Length: 222
Image (cartoon, rainbow, N blue to C red; front, top):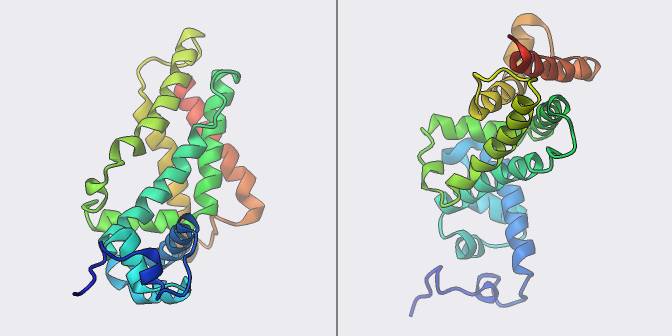
């Protein structure tokens, strides 16, 4: 009788030699798969290559993720979950609204700069019309956290009469995200055309402050 991926146990998938920590194994697979999909796209990435780089087997990968599409979706979900968890850490309750929204903008700036694979994955999934992400059971949780954080900041800003009232949380998120994504995603073409590296460490604080200023000015404009 042939063993199917769903019937395979971790020990079977590893050839019976040893049973690894499932969480550790899954995390290692996702780490390598993130780089593989970001570098080669969905079509170009190879599960065999991912298995080779994780010291595991293709059967083990299918045991955890069922298919290449399942692995790719897990990579996307993990990438979005990282930034969403960081956004929840903004101290909305104790910072004044202006400082809170600036902190959120700077946090996004720092994350996108240090996670270029995230930007590549988002670009790749947009090429695919977000058809894989649309199947995620985590989809509601990929948007709610940041909208909730910004909404709470806006409410405090409105209560203190600091922010204009004709804005919503989604617009603020898009304003922040667009600058941070553009800066990383278009680094090479901008440098080729304008001879200006948007990720030049010498200008990092300039762009970081520029983003914060833009968001604050937008919210406080009358």
